[in-house]
Image (cartoon, rainbow, N blue to C red; front, side):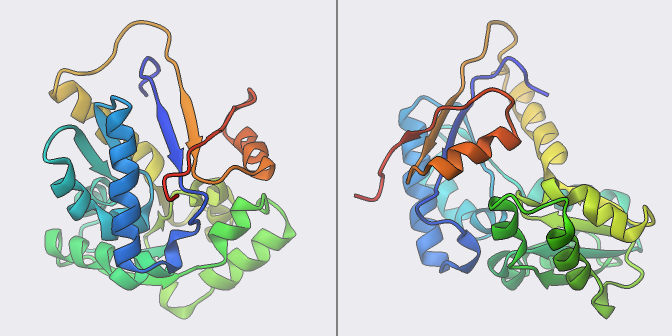
Length: 243
């Protein structure tokens, strides 16, 4: 959606997954990573993780003091659900941290009390995807086991409340045989970012973009996994923010 923008990516591989980390730790990680990105000259920071958005957004926003625009991956999806699913039943799957916070349930209810929500922690999915297990027998077995829970019967939409889950969106859609809308945050959040940049008049419209990729703990396996998203080989630079 924003092909001219320079992207600086920081993956906190030293602490992955965030789903089972304490809120205090996540707030610390979020602040330190944001400081790193701020020093890199970023004009907008996206907390591209649901658990970090749930527990770290408020404290990170206070820490940044308005120096850059800050976007999380929860609010845009909540706004989309509230607008489109009046009086419907919506399911939510995510990490233990995200689901335990009940942030989606509470914020959807606040905006649209007539929407019924049901949520389920699916802790095996993110590590499964991280290891490249998707679109195969193993992934389908795990996905089907989770989504067969009685509480998810008759849902009109399912929120994939983890930024890993778009990679299994097709498999989830197959489970529901296209009778349920599958909502992943990727396109919804990207559109929100575009609106934020346009409104602030800081959208980059010309020039060839330059992307930089950083991780807190380098492994060859993680660099190999970047091919899932990029056809070209991506070089990862290790930055040990925690030393």
